[in-house]
Image (cartoon, rainbow, N blue to C red; front, side, top):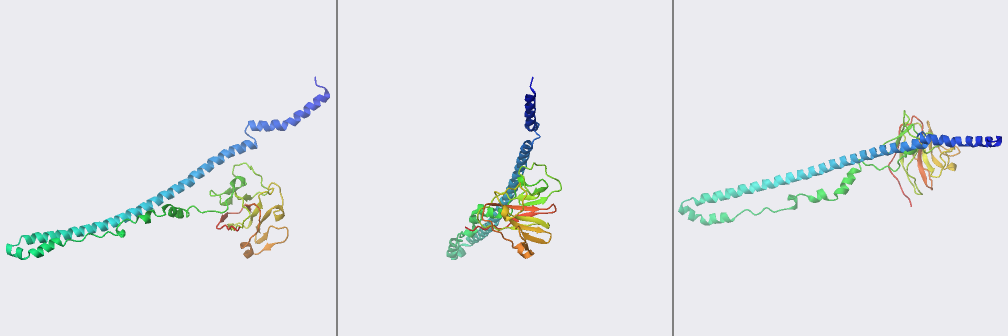
Amino acid sequence: MLSGNNSTIEGKLKEALRPAEKSLLSLLNATSQESKISKYIQSQSQMTERSIRMEFEKLHHFLSKEEQRRIAALNEEESEKGEKMERVIQERILLLSDKIREVEERMEDDDINFLKNYHSIMNRTKSTLPDQELSSDSLIDVSKHLGNLKYQVWENMKDICPYYPVILNPSITQPDFSVSDDLTSVTSSLHKQNKPNAVPLHRKHMVLGSVGYGEHVYTWDIEVGNSRHWTLGVCLRSVERSVVQPLTPENGYWGLKRDGDSYKLLTTGNSKLNMKEAKAFTQECAVPSYVFFIGTHDMKCVRSRCRTEYVV
């Protein structure tokens, strides 16, 4: 039998084990956060695979249409030049047939007329039509159809394959925000997405770019849709995003904020801007960083596009 002290110690140990037992039970019952994340990883993989297949299906469709268009152009040229050559052949057949018939008719003349016209008839038989001179214009313009073919197709493909210098990271987007299929814009969602919040963010509506940027000069044009309340800028890769703190350069954030009709820089002091200054906003950050967006629930769209400049 346990003594009083031993019983107390045993009780404390059992009490200390309860969190571990609870965590073990949740893992065994697949109700833990880790289990939810594991299931979400499977869901992410399936959704991403579907998106990949859809994107390649678009490319296949484009390439198929491009192939059909180019083959149609080749067939059209073949038809035009083939018909032109056929007309030349028919014209030569007609002229030669007329000449042969004329000589044969002269041969039917009486002897006196035949002998009288013998030399002219003989010259007539010798004056055959010259062979048709073959020029490059008569043949298929192969270089037009095959020259830099892959490059030309690639140039046309850029119309359906735009390049976005900033893409968003859906894995760390809050459940009430939805990132577009091409990962270039974010909109508020009326229905929360069923996904675990694997990476904590200190702001409910913060969305990060998926690629970090180094010590160069980058410029972007950002479309903020109809939202009148938003913040955008860059933050340090090393910033502690799970901690609630002011968005200031001292804490690793550089950017621009709109609150209704008011624009201001992310600084500790008063740094209001007018509309013209806000549109021409630039901010230097010569350290590795991420682009971030913050918007309220009424934000319709945030899209990155256009240009990136590198200065070495």
